[in-house]
Image 1: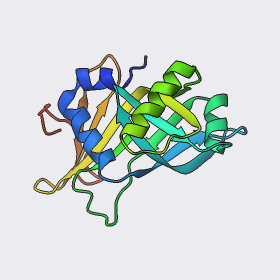
Image 2: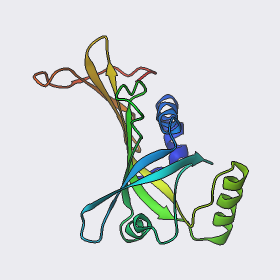
Image 3: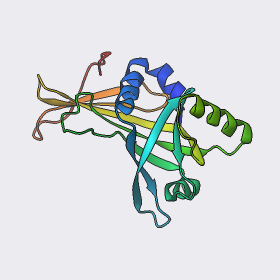
Length: 176
């Protein structure tokens, strides 16, 4: 099952806002695609969230675009920033990327990019989300807080202390 960004926002408004803020903190993030031989390819990428979609744009002849055309599965990791504090957490999104090739859709995308001062890429992919994960640290409890969302399910949160303790279910709260 997959959903787009608008579906994620509708299902989990507070969680999606925290994820959006984490991606908005820095323009450049890391995209994982699958090479022809099945090995991973990690590359930098700017991410846009607008019009109810998470967009991936790429330069002409981009190897990551060729990867996604062949196998649409991807993973996207937020930029950790200049230090290791990451007060807003660490975010990963997985899903499928669908290349936009229809002229009206490409034209709409180009107009929106121009209005926001962005460069229009040659390869444009909209995404279908299969998983969103945010990991934060609860400094007071000295625990990792792992919040996960899958389409069709409510978000799920686990808290984990040191490696000797098993993870435990956490009650849902708006700040998760």
